[in-house]
Image (cartoon, helix red, strand yellow):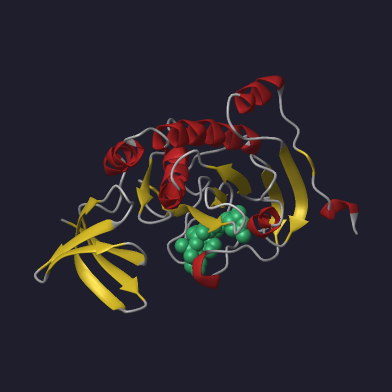
Length: 262
Ligand code: BT5
């Protein structure tokens, strides 16, 4: 195998290592090129806490077999093996917990909000990050969760429809590893909160404060059809509540298109 395809230890500054040591995450590894960091960690799900970043993914994955695009070396691409110390029905909330962690990590750099169910949008507009969580067959409380965060790509007006990057918004990230450590520290904080007895409700409150979706007129696309209405609330389970003339609908999966603010 080409040496570049072997993961190597992630080089961290002493203060970065110290921050990581205060979380459930680590060790960190990095690889020049791989198919998908999520797919790699699904085969290593017994290595709890393992963090894998890639300079390039040749088969980066989104939900529902969609692809995640990023040119080599341009963006932050990583996955982690997360063990949640909470009932397994809370594992879907790992996705919004990571989304909130990115919003927190971007504070002071670029204001951002969480778009239901798995995106982070810049407040100036555009999808800056997507999250993919995948369950592991071995343990219902262990999930592999990956994030693609657009640091340098795409430039304004390019890339997938609706995408943006920190660079396009004028925010420069000198050290992507520093951003990764900030995200992991904030993720640990969110997971600790989620693990409290009333964790789902606490997370819901945080999400409501940082939601790009609640308050919007939305179109929800689901396999069974589409639903148009106003996104009015989130449930502690993570589901989105949409209100229209037909009533109140609790949506647990689907794609959301924001139509306009109301
Ligand atoms: C996601 O899926 O947004 C989840 C993306 C997760 C990517 C990370 S990278 C590290 C780890 N390893 C992986 O293999 N995956 C994870 P979804 O909601 O299905 O959105 C996918 C859609 O976003 C695509 O169909 C495109 O339209 C769009 N897209 C693709 N690349 C993008 C990018 N770089 N920025 C913004 N949008 C993008």
